[in-house]
Image 1 (cartoon, rainbow over the protein chains, first blue to last red):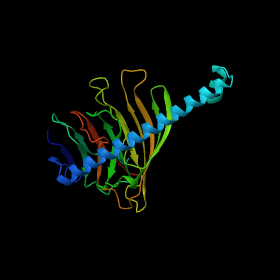
Image 2: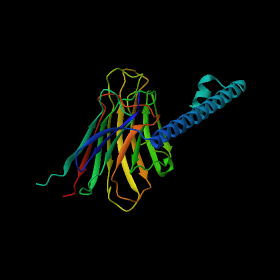
Image 3: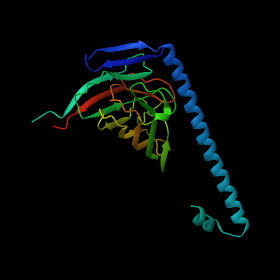
Image 4: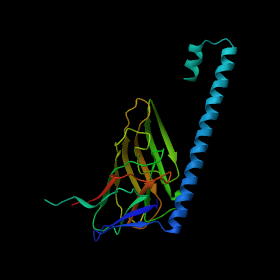
Length: 75
Length: 171
């Protein structure tokens, strides 16, 4: 399927549906890659935080804190 | 009594879908603009990009979002175009569309432009849905003459996705 762009000219009211130009296709691919990279970085950060929290919970439990006490500390 | 909230133009996506919806040659006869959308996209992420005057440089845009997703809430800050609200997407309840309202004050200003938006992408789920309030900035100083919205993951709009642009006059 060819990707299209719907453009409405607000002065004339004319609506056109046109194929994306080569430049627009390239921009679209770059945007998709940038978005995927940003999502991956966001997910990696969240995973690292979750791992750090789990590690902290384990160490606190090893010190003798109950699960409720750990929860009160870390939320 | 003057008409102060006037429909400028509307776009509805046809049966074949579309990658982007765009408003061009926006007249310089209003004070503010309002863009209302009802969106659904083919991808798997709800983020919608909002672009002014065909400025494709992501870092010229800033957005802060108070986001409610499922059982949690958070505040997100990013330096990109993703301030166009949320759209329902492929995994969401069939035939449902998001609702977004974007307010752009002083669109003719020679200063950088701010905007605010509220948006919800509903889903028949207790844990997977989006709603958010957005505050955004575009660093461009030219009057806004064009607005483009498209899925941030570069998928497509589905049929019946709509966007309507209104002009607001201060008198």
